[in-house]
Length: 143
Image (cartoon, rainbow, N blue to C red; front, side, top):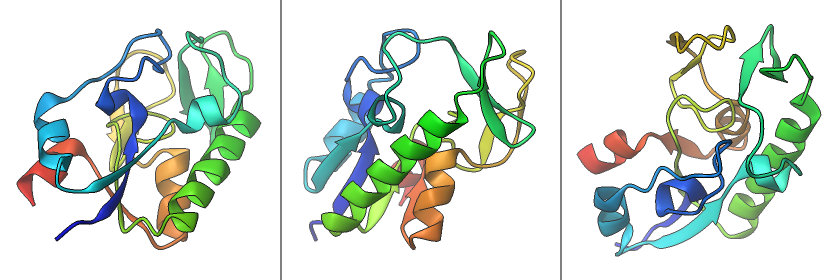
């Protein structure tokens, strides 16, 4: 059965990560072959550059490592990405783990030390509010 799936563009090989690289996942891409894929990068949709300063959620707002508040860009990009998902009838999302946008179940703690905590990124939360389930690549491959 073909399913419409929103996927973090970095997982598909698009160089849209903060460091200008990607998180290409060949096993995920192979598993997605039988589905309709909607690639999105909420951070780029929100107007952030590639590359960009690393960001984490600090006290509920997204801040970059230089202490600049970029929360509005993250929320704007998440809203645009959710709109794409809804307009295209997406039934599921496969998102990049730990990201302040796309993290599902686990994100960095806001200290920029690599420490992880339970939580969801801005886009993952927005998808949940819109009724679209988000999973990590590992969870998708285990389905």
